[in-house]
Image (cartoon, rainbow, N blue to C red):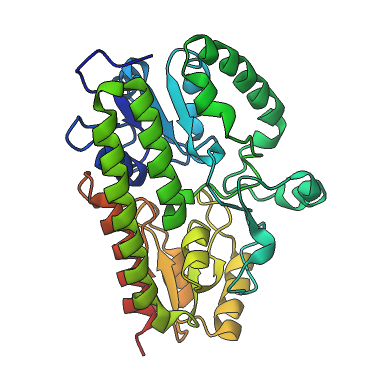
Length: 351
């Protein structure tokens, strides 16, 4: 579907950080709509009727993938062939990291065994899939749906080709097992650059009248992201060796990009409170690894973090992977990443 001549295309984006990147590319043309409420978690979200209409009316929908916004899987499967649907976990240039199946991690600055770029062969990991099956944090049974999903995409390709914009949308992309890989891809600035480039290409295809503006914005945003990465590199270098716990395993991309020392997560499944046995084990991890901080999240308000920290030599901080308190707009992505850096340093650098 192409935007009407001279008009801005209708673009709907699932979550705030990605919405911010898309808006920065549309500057001077129009403004995308945000599907999900800022303060909500994508885990188990359900859309209001107005958000369903927004989705149906869009010329283009941008989402991370079924490993994150499970609520979009069904409605988007019904839209295939009718509009451009960009699933970011499948695009060229995105580096994917495997889900970690336990809540305790051996720290490794390189995380080499967990990293895969878009050209990797995933067959060699079949033997490891079993160990990820019980990691329910983001594995909502998508592995068994994956063949159907790939099949749907194949038919979507045929339909899109007839409309003369599907070939580009899929020629360089790759199907991944969405239960195998961690979906918080926007927390890597390198991934953000790949997202910006691809969104710019797709916008130029559905709205060629404004292609030059999109291309100029992509260049500017990519340069700004490079500066942001340099700034965070410098800021976080002072706490790289400080061990800490996060609330759930949402920050792996950020950890890897800035060589941080997270040693585990409070919960494996963000929707479930950890039991007494796990709390005992985590308190032992905090003691043994001398974890300087435990980070909670605003989307989840578990008293369990206070219980964990009780009488232990550790601080409590807060990290927000979605920017729930930020105003939406082109600066929200930078504000989110800067906030993560600030909050990590302020907690980890405390005595």
